[in-house]
Image (cartoon, rainbow, N blue to C red):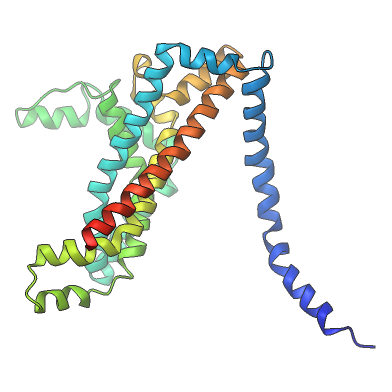
Length: 283
């Protein structure tokens, strides 16, 4: 006795859902549950209400830390974009062997511990480190790089640069370079052809890279803790202090909820800005 054709179709329709089920379970256990717990604690610990949020917005120090966090994230994103864009572009025009080397240089950081890379920056940026030694050799410096926001930004840019390069390269590699040749044949200057043709087509990679780097920068803890100073702490360090040091789970949850809400708002704003910029450049 043969099964109805509709039964076979139903089994095939359920297969994609079964394939993603393990990922959904892991996402629910390791991300959704902690997130919901944090939100609940923000409104219920130690007493139900908005007391934790009143404390957060009522303390000027908390607002300064929040502003410093977003300012640092924006600086890291902008600098990473400026450094990574020409690097990704070079990967698209390089010969296969050179492209392999450039790709390897981007992927190497993924094979090295974040802690190890951060401690390497501690050595490089210290007052008697390699960077200050090189600057003194050419008559510049020494500069106070360690225990400053400058050192934090330098370390975070290097750590997050691969997350900017890879989306840029993925988009740039699919752009037909004959479009630039066609624009040049029509009388466009190479710079104008790049700005009018190539740059708008690469904006999806710019958007993806900027969003990835910016979101990651907001949650960094190890790098600011090792390269920065307590007086210039970011919100991730303050959350750690509230939860682990003071056992104020509600206050830590409130800071996390505020950070999450503002992050989502900034993501929407950055996406809208990049979209409008792309339209203006294309026009």
